[in-house]
Structure formats: C-alpha cells, structure tokens
Length: 239
Image 1 (cartoon, rainbow, N blue to C red):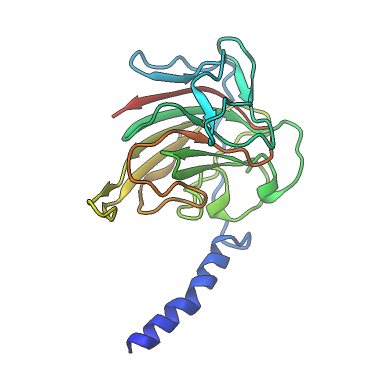
Image 2 (tube, rainbow, N blue to C red):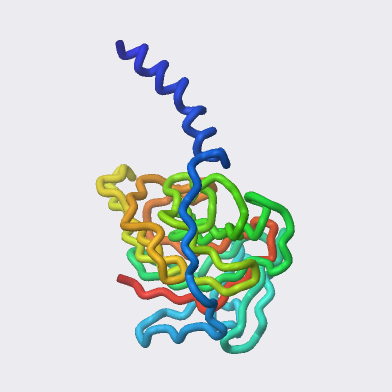
C-alpha cells in the first residue's frame, strides 16, 4: 500500500504543477478598484521609508552591488526597473511587518500573459507577491497580479489599467522554524490590492519559486523580470 501511495503522489505531482500554470483554470472575479491616486500617500509617522523617490542608497542588487534601476531623483518620484540589470533588495532586513508598495506596469502594452508588466515583491527575499499587468490579460490564476506565486490565487482581480498607479498593502507574519530549520508554524500573508482584500491571512510554509531558502529575517526584493515596471512610496512598519 505504501508503494502504491508513493507512486500515486509521484504521478500526480506534475499534473498539479501543470494545473497551477494553466490559463484554462477558472477565472478570478474582476472588481473595479476605483480611480488611481495621482500622488503617493504619506507614510505613517513610525514607518521606515525604503524609497521616497530621491535615491536608491537603501538598495543593492542580489550580489551586493549598488542598485542600477533608474530613480526619478526627487521626493515623491518613482524608480523604474532597468531590464537585465537584475533584481534589487533592501539593505535592511525584516521579520513580521506591514509593507506598503506602489507600482505601475508599462502604459504601452507589450506582450501577453506572463510577458506583460511582470515583476514581483518578495517578502524576506522568499515569498513573492506577483506584480503583473492583469488588466484584460488572461493568465493562470496563481500567476496573476496579487497571487502568492504558484501558492495562492488572489480572491479577485483588482488591477487598474496599464500605466496607472496601484497599491499593495501587505501584512506579513513570518513562519516559525525549529533549530533544524523545519517549519513549526506557517507564515501568514494578507494583501490589499488598491484597497481591496485579495489575500486573507493565507498560510505560507515554503518559499515561492526563486525565493531564498533561509529562515531568518530578510530584505524586501523587487524583481527584474524584463519589464519596465515602476515603483514608488515603499515603506515598512515592523510588527
């Protein structure tokens, strides 16, 4: 019986992965989020501001080299991913946290599916909240904007039009590990996309694809996926 069960699990594993990346999976309901903000919202008084538009001094590439993304260079401005330069991470590391990120996918639509406005916000350099232009763009639910990549599809699709500013407000509770690095209590992620709840305290037991395998506090990681996605007004409140 044990060998039969093992054989079933091995056979089923590729089917699960194929299903997770199939655009034919049931569609996520669409909810219109309302008008986009013109200016970034002011951070709370106790927030650690990670990017305010002026410089990328608080960020590096994964190899520790200075970040080569392109900042506007003024307060309230944005930074733009420089495709091919590599993902960037904060110099500071975090555990449990409230995280605010504003982003805009390119206003000129180029590509489709996962090739359109793709980036990601990795919490602790491990757990990716997908960034994607999912406005009238069909792709697999666990890979669309707001997904915990290949783990949890968003409850709804709350995307604005390409080029419009959008917000993620994330509450993250880190997993608890034993001395051997085994998870004893799952992490939890709640995400509001443009003010709409899309991930409701969902469990996280392992890093998403491309995530670091460590167990301690980690940085915020913004992904270079080859698209000129913009980010602004990034701040964290440790919890």
